[in-house]
Length: 498
Image 1 (cartoon, rainbow, N blue to C red):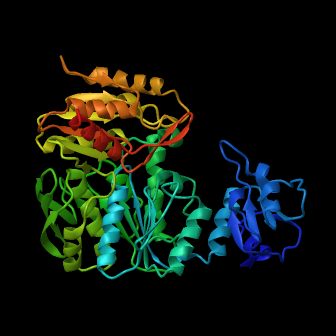
Image 2 (image 1 turned 90 degrees about the horizontal axis):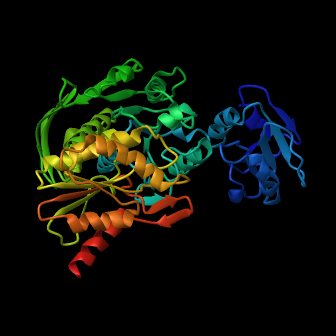
Image 3 (image 1 turned 90 degrees about the vertical axis):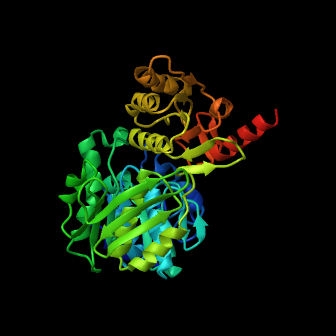
């Protein structure tokens, strides 16, 4: 609990208080539905709505103060804090309100286009094996040790993120592993957090609808690494873990002014992967690093997971975990839901569900599938609506070039017409087709998965890409339950029941 006067002292800029500055604040929220007595309600002006429209509702529910850019006519009395920029004020106030939990725990940030989720989970798994209490914040969920909490964005806004971190600190977490999105870095949702280890996985085309240019996208990612060398740090031992094989590694390395550990397979690196053996359900490789050389046998597969594992080893080493603990933990690690996840229903061909929803991740997933030496690859995929349209034909062409039978379908169309999205993807498919190559377009995702299972023959791989762990589909009519893994199993059972 803190007073309005205390909170406003943190604001770097102009503010005006209309009301009693000694009023005590018990909580902060930008969602009027979450307001409880004693809360400060934040009026964010978003793309689709303006928080000031819900200020009166927030006050009726017990909000004692409103953070806004202009004075609002309210039916009940509440203190109004007026600032030029609500977002900047929140970045200053909220971490202070929660006593800066991101400065009290070891914070490991993982950023990049692909691989963030798996890398984060491997790091957390190793840290737990070393005896630490670990929180995880990512695409799939938030974890406090083994307790799972729902999460809505890869990196939540400042308010929700600080609330999560405060809860983790109160529950005794010593380390937090976070997926840090380019949106969060560009919008400074990570304000008030002091990162200790930062991991760069890779950079490929994504989110250009938001960043506009690739240079802006790279600059946003680089902010995480620049933050490691800020003068106001209260913790020691800062390390950047960088994929040296990535084409944009130099752009990240230029932002690093602390200890750097590179990792890679192709170029010389501080953590070198070699002698790779990648099979359908397992992989094995050697890692040479500051600790010597170790041979690893993993229960996850794919070249991309070799990179994810190398990144995780680097982060764990930076956090002081010994090699024996790292090696043992990796032997026990199994796949993350929706990340090249095998679906078994007694079929005589392989079904893999993967979150690959960018050109690079789709290409890597298809190349990994090809490395398994299947008879054929059938790829079910699409592109999400209200997102970067430029990648649609690119992904279509990649699927045509890398799969034997590409099947274009709907992903999360959101507010867009799914037929229009599919048409843009199919245009790319047609560019990449080989003479005589079969392709199909089935807008209904369930029907597309059933069709792939129907076409599959012994020794084939059916790759269902794009949604991974998601158990929903966002349509222009609303959100429905939809899980690729469930549908794939149902399709196999339906085929067997004929």
